Image (cartoon, rainbow, N blue to C red; front, side):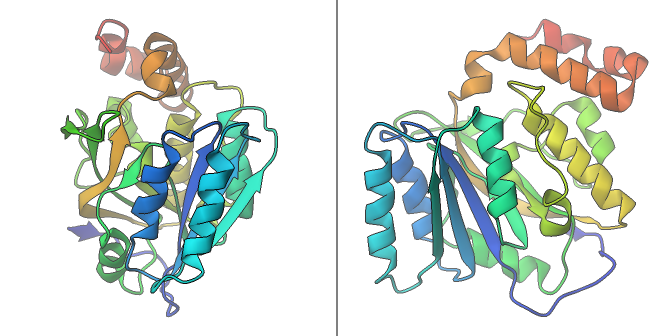
Length: 265
């Protein structure tokens, strides 16, 4: 486990915002809700941004709020339901609404890996506040069966240059500090891979502020292996190529990532 020291420390308990973006997610939302609901750490905000679902998604969320009112470890649950302009517009709304020291995006169908995860992360960082807390990701199928670890694995020391080699940290295993996420929105020019660009920009800003990163050395999330960027794999890779060209330059991007265009989903 390695933590680089940020410029300052804080004494208040660290607060985590888990942001979930939904639209007609009645078949998937419950597993995500339960993974947050089961957390034994009290300083949690679950922020649900719904795109005006027409199924029973909101009913699941209302039952969740009712259970939370009598839970032994209650959390803050905030739900906004209104039309949006797509996934990244909804995620930008979450960035504006979040109140946590850190934000993690956990979309419908994804889960926090264990009920003690947030307690463990809080204990690991103590009073330190790194720019990013990150870890591993497991892949699961639609029946919540374990597929295996994510193919790309995070390095021991994560910097913005690490992503030259691809998205080494899954977006669902990447906690960003409030000083960074509040000033960094998702670029709506990208349809499939704005999260890749966002993570790079978060890391860049963290380094500029001389804030370190913290490798949690544990599995953060169970990722449902059939999201938008899986179904649109080739388009996603083309976007990632554009993003890498923007951040790392053409020669480096071609040299490191020509294989992106030939690998299979």
